[in-house]
Image 1 (cartoon, rainbow, N blue to C red):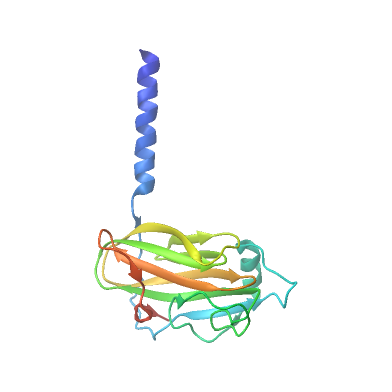
Image 2 (spheres, one colour):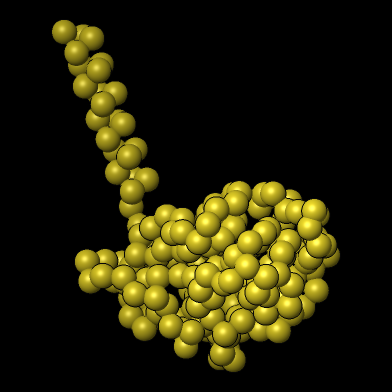
Length: 192
């Protein structure tokens, strides 16, 4: 009987822990609220022509310590490219690491779903919470969908580390209020 109670308590504790992990991530708005220009700021590092390569997000973050400013991004609407096309605004086609910063505007509070897409690795954060992560190489695919709590309308900080090694590149984001479907985040929602 004691063993059954102990097992029941352990199962209850596990369910509570899982439920706590499944709770929406609470975003922290920018303070003070900015009046940004459109787009996102970006800094780049380049590992050189092939066979030089970036294999992991960790390697990309090391490279970004020496990053240089690039032409701002229009937002996060960079669809899968053709092989040999430049990555984002870098002017380079391969072995590019990018440090992207700025803001995203939510027009109303509530629970939202966020989904990042990348080719290759990404570490994306909004309002201090991780909303997208992939460590290595992949084709242009969704990373994961997360629920976030937006406590108030306004601007929220965005910070993204990203890299692309070979072949094609993409970097995109979807969003939507929970239960109302997802759509691509319009470029007009981003500021720098």
